[in-house]
Image (cartoon, rainbow, N blue to C red; front, side, top):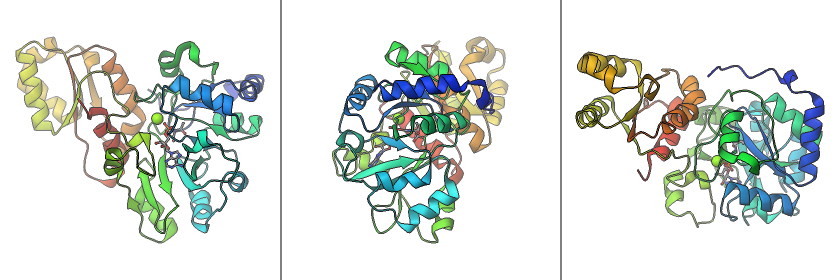
Length: 349
Ligand code: TXA
Ligand code: MG
């Protein structure tokens, strides 16, 4: 997958106008953001939101993020905009960050999941920005996959996942970030990161000049009916169909050897040194056991890893293997978002 986004100009304005018109009619338009593709609906239309939940197959009490074109729109959707929100907006918007703020009165319960807060984001992908600006309102958009499955990072993955249920797909090339936005709640006294992403806690802290906690995503997962609902915090969210295990290199090699001994088909996503070790250990048996496409060398760089993560899992998942073995990622904070998604991908397997 290339890290380049297709030039924005490739999609003619006429197409963007048509997409905005569909949104106005209450229809669904999938569009690229820098994180993952979103399934967009008019955030002010009950009928559009109803359809959105149906197509997602998502429980209706789960909130969706409203995508905006400009910071000046914040006060239309949030009843208070704290100074911290403006500082973060200046630093990281447009970009892969979602802020949870107290909702304005008109915000529909279908958007907030019945809560008193709303998630807001200004994406940076040029095509997303053109769509939202042309539409002229807030665009509610969860990731453009069925509930609980891998998020799409290409237009092809959206089409495969949603088929005819989506009225239009805008193709903006592969997503440059690759995992969902960092979600920051500004509801309490201290900012809390509810979902880690590629925007890191230390960067948020340096803008706000205060301590920011990395939220209890696991704890929330265990109390999904609790006050703040984050479906992304369900343990098995973002899961491939194939049984997936995340382990250290040594265990991965052991498990692979065990599987190979009994003729099981296995997929591997591991760092280069681990793959080299496997080649040395297993020699020619390794090459006959593994189809090359079932074997992905993971990038050593966290940004590049994130960019390719869902596509790699999707590729391995499509092979109907017995098991997918993923090498655990390093401990550093730059891996927080990736580690979180891998934990969810392997939960429940
Ligand atoms: O990068 C992204 O955030 C992508 C792109 C399309 O923008 N969107 C995305 O949406 O990941 P979705 O619906 O798959 O995940 C949105 C997350 C959910 O976990 C949801 O619970 C949380 O945002 N969320 C939205 N509003 C919230 C609120 N008021 N309070 C707490 N969590 C909220
Ligand atoms: Mg999602």
